Length: 623
Image (cartoon, rainbow, N blue to C red; front, side):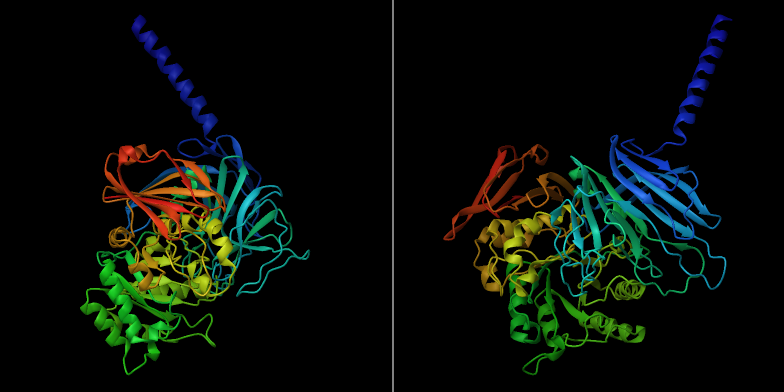
């Protein structure tokens, strides 16, 4: 009798505890691990990380629909998938999903992850003449907030300078300039990195662009501290439910930012069943040393021979191959590569961006029937992939065209590399044949202007925290010799970029004579260098100062770091996670006559501290 009464009392206590616990939590918007919480005030969302203010989403909704109902928990969500390349081979994520209404037919979908927040809008059109409403989503970035933001241009080829103000002068680009009434730049490209409080970081971007979407950028033309999400031109005819892309904020410490896979996590899963033919790899590349070399069969042969010598799987034939000299054709060049066991990639103009005065071939991919003919021919003669260049920005026309190109290429087992194109927004998950995208101020700029020489080291040490977070990045790294303008980064710095910068196609920028003049250990390194990784680990660093990243492939670790400053820098290294394997260390030598210091060590004996030369670097590669 006593036992029964005690059991009833215990049951009632548990029931009351459960009631109060769930009652207290039902309106608390939180991540699965509780580190990220969101407080709603009307249509404003205040995001906190570990109880520290991280991000204010000041406005939610559209001009016509801006009254947000209370957020309600929907369900926990999780995902588990694999990809043939990227930061990892196996991806998992968990989030809590919430819903709210802006109108009977306009909904907000909010996902709160352990390392970020993502939201999108669902609109159910009520008429055939539906017009996409004007989005008013806005983030508040107060003056004084430390930030690394790129002034927008349609190719996303700009710097991410550290600043604490929005009041900066606009930089001319291929897209012109965007000025506020006060004369300051007022349009900003993704990703935008913020440090709202010490050691809390936020990276703003977007994901999952569909053919009926345009991409967006951030505008603060009306209020310097209020950054509005403004989609580019969209003339698509909308039928059925309309979803905006995900508005994404990766949140946490720098390790959370660098290691994040949130952009691909949010993208639509691939419907391509067979991806065994998608093979990431390192590429020998003509353009950096020979701007017009791809119309010369003998120069192409040099780069095929380089790929053979270094044991690289690919070589790229760039623009102007349709004007081959000396009676040779592109089919002759492709045959030479295939016969030597090297997979050729070739370049095309998108022919919707820069056209007049641009190199060819042009207008071969724009019409579906022409594209089908071209890709059928490429597959037949043995071409492995295409590099498509010179797009015209973020509008819906470009997004739809890119998706058509990716699908058509996949139908013919062709990989794709977009250049002069918009920022990655998750397409590499939806279309695993998209092995890389440029959208970065990379090494080819040594060809163009002298600006890069003095800025490269700091820029390189910023990209792992900004551009490369959101997707594969075709920077074209590793030049030991000079192009039209000199580089002043060291050899070990250049070598480190091949590990620091993730890209499903890693194009080596240098000329054959330079690469083949390097020590045999360096040449052997290229032949074993992965272009796909199983794991990533942020070791240390800070934007523009220095960065050290470890990547793992087939149970072998690669650790690389660079100094972004013009002075010696001593850094501490905790490499206890790499185990006791044998490693080869590539460091900077004493002087120009001895540019390399190469040694071997057991994992347990790797240095706990390194002093990097000005603009220097290092690589540790497990043997």
